[in-house]
Image (cartoon, rainbow, N blue to C red; front, side, top):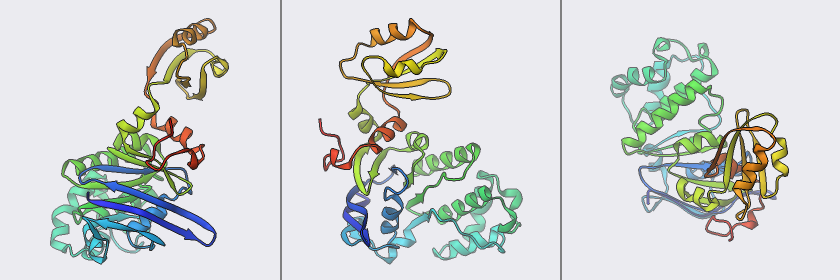
Length: 309
């Protein structure tokens, strides 16, 4: 196992931020730590980076306790962004790379490639203060990966990015994974987690409530979701017999049904009132799992990160 967290705990005054959290992060995967704001994601990442020291438990990298040498092998993008505003893009990247013993000549070999990848090549000689917030975030992402770290740790990487730049970063992360890099990121944006993650852990109130591969996590919730496209107002669907939850989107409705619900009867009931354009039984989306699980009490889950049967 590349990175292991063993029963780590962090308490601030009378608040437990992270409670007996254990994770195993294999090499060469994209691993997502998901959860609502305030769940303990950032505290967990800061403990991995040895910025915050756990009150108890241990963190191992390649079966050894994390120490100062770990920082030279990791690329870390914190949630709180920060760059030197008066420096040029070239100087910022060179300076940050030098902190990782990556020479200016090595930076020069790779900088144009990365600036092109994130659409910043035209700003190469500009000062940071001349860039928009989104551009600055992409620049900081470059400083995180240019020294070719073995593991890349990103805290809320997609926060503040528009859809086009989200796609740019997503594609780069997938390419880095193909190169064998390990990527650990936190997010509360479920759409991105679902697109990217091989493995994930959901934290709620500082405790792990789900853990496993994306496929495994979805399978625990079964194929008991239905997506429906209709013409008309579908609010009545939430009152139908057998419907446990109802989530309305702009273009479709997603419902979760009881295990023994009659899907044919639900379809007939809907079709009696509105025109049905699509009726499909699907795995629940990660968004739906997130909403359902985040609302639950962490004590409703067992220690392996799965719901009680």
